[in-house]
Image 1 (spheres, rainbow, N blue to C red):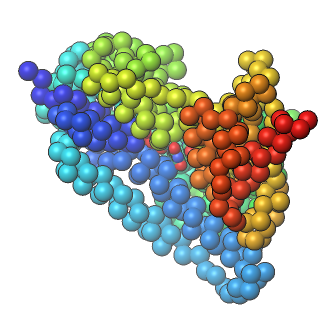
Image 2 (tube, rainbow, N blue to C red):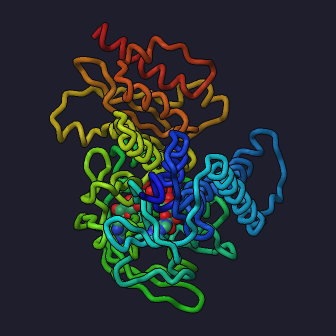
Image 3 (cartoon, rainbow, N blue to C red):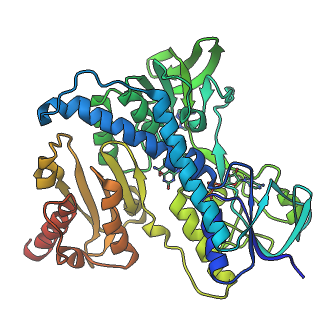
Amino acid sequence: MADFDIVIIGSGPAGYVGAIHAAQRGLKTACVVVENELGGTCLNVGCIPSKALLHASEVLAAFKEEGKEWGLSQPNVEIDFPTMIKRKDEIVKKLTTGIGYLFKKNKIETLSGFGTFIDKETLQVGDRKVTAKNFIIATGSTPTPLPGLNFDGSKVISSTEALSLPNLPKKLLVVGAGVIGLELGSFYSRLGVEIEVIEFLNRITPEYDDDISSVFMRILEKQGLKFNLNSKVISGSVKADGVILQVETKEGIKEFSGDHALVSIGRKPFTDGLGLEKAGVRVSNQGFVEVDGIFKTSNSNIYAVGDVIGGAMLAHKGSHEATVAIDHILGKKSTMKYGAVPGVIYTSPEVASVGASEKDLKAKGVDYKVVKFPLAANSRYVAIGGKDPCFVKYLVCKKTKRLFGASMIAPHAGELIGEPTLAISQNLTLDALAHTIHAHPTFLEALHEAAMGSIFDFYHL
Ligand code: FAD
Ligand code: NAI
């Protein structure tokens, strides 16, 4: 008889949410947890610590930039960087302790250590050999290094070190203008650090529509971030006091120096030491664990979810995949709606999207309509003194008025995106959104206006 019904390897948002879901449905569940990693990347070195730091710096920036105008005057706001980092660590501790509590409450056994398959049915964790009716691999991802310039944890750093620097640097080179580069670049920029972003494409945030990316870049430039697009790092050298990068640009080779280089060019699946070959689990050419529609791997007793299977590397996507996989193990039908997975960039203003982009729709030859509404015409935005060219945008089916996608650059976009996510997930039309009463004054009214305006167009043009 197997030791457990389910053993989940990894305790990030895919692993710990899956473990709780399984245990609450009566399955004898264990979770393999590396020391000090309960909560995985998300809680320890990802979503939570980055948002804790971003919040502190956002308050500072608002106070410094708008304070006088608001009638708040304090000429000498001091930055106590070690306290900021300490507060972030305390928040992480509070939340990881909470997961430990939930594990106990739900009688989930913690198997402490690193899990390695030794054959198709057995996982070794420390000295213990464990069997289970089903295993779920939720081992996440790690930062991708720059070819030829490995992470050294001090000068050439990943997001992990950038969240816990011992001192505030003077200048930070950020390689990659994606989500991590722009969130952490914004954080340090607000604390007065000079930020030089090096991105090899001709735009930032490539997965967003062009109009969002270009407005976003203008806003970040106004905040002080410097961008070098079409720029490729060709080599780098580490010195005692910093790092120098040689970068190929349209104008020729340029040299950039800084205290650190934050390399944020994507993340790769974490499968090292997992013994996938012995378990008979296949991986793709990029190293992601291959799964079918219900997250089963090439070994029918082993499932995989979260960052390790690829797709959008987002906490909520991994968590939901885990619950869907467990529902299938329990014989219940459950599906993953990838068209309704929101993504958010927690800069100021925030940027968010859900569903199809214009590029997706054009590639499919779909007939769609673009509806935009500027935040400048939203009373709440005016009330907070918003000055950026923020807007919300819907992509709507011309025939059915169903929502294909939404994207926005707006204060609290990470909260606002919930409305179009629900609409897409439940196949709602713009009528449903237009006929829903929204509180006043709220940023949500911008989405309501977009829906109303669009309906007006549909009916009257
Ligand atoms: P992980 O969270 O990576 O957890 C996997 C765990 O398994 C890790 O602790 C790993 O060490 C462990 N593990 C690996 N191999 C083994 C083994 N053999 N045995 C035992 N344990 C093992 N996403 C969002 O949705 N919102 C955000 O705001 C956000 N911010 C982010 C900010 C940063 C700086 C970073 C780096 C990421 C951020 N992400 C965010 C992405 C998010 O953190 C990941 O998508 C999410 O953590 C993936 O969850 P997971 O459970 O698949 O893997
Ligand atoms: P990313 O995929 O978001 O962005 C990487 C950027 O680096 C791209 O713009 C790409 O063109 C560029 N790039 C790639 N190779 C390069 C090179 N050699 N030189 C210069 N530029 C190069 O990856 P990032 O920012 O590292 O984030 C990793 C993952 O973490 C993302 O997939 C994201 O989903 C997740 N994450 C999510 C957050 C959120 O939801 N708010 C926050 C932070 C991370």
